[in-house]
Image 1 (cartoon, rainbow, N blue to C red):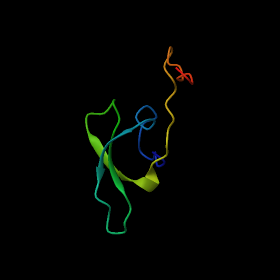
Image 2 (cartoon, rainbow, N blue to C red; image 1 turned 30 degrees about the vertical axis):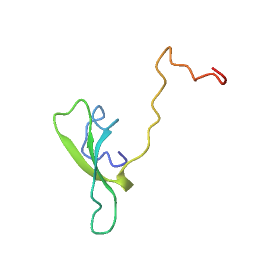
Image 3 (cartoon, rainbow, N blue to C red; image 1 turned 60 degrees about the vertical axis):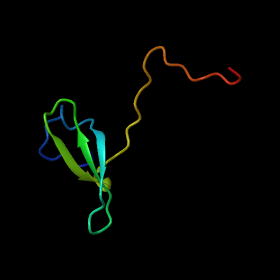
Image 4 (cartoon, helix red, strand yellow; image 1 turned 90 degrees about the vertical axis):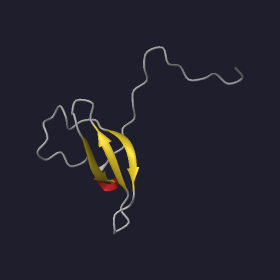
Length: 67
């Protein structure tokens, strides 16, 4: 999330989207998000999110062409 005000550094880092919600009255998309270290979910708008590229797990390889 972009706005980390009031959150501890350990919980402010990574959230996953668990649901897409109806847009707000101003047409801002809304999402239900969750951090695995918290017991509850949060609702946020798209402008508060920032994309995170997950690192590859060891042993994950890109598929070879022609295979």
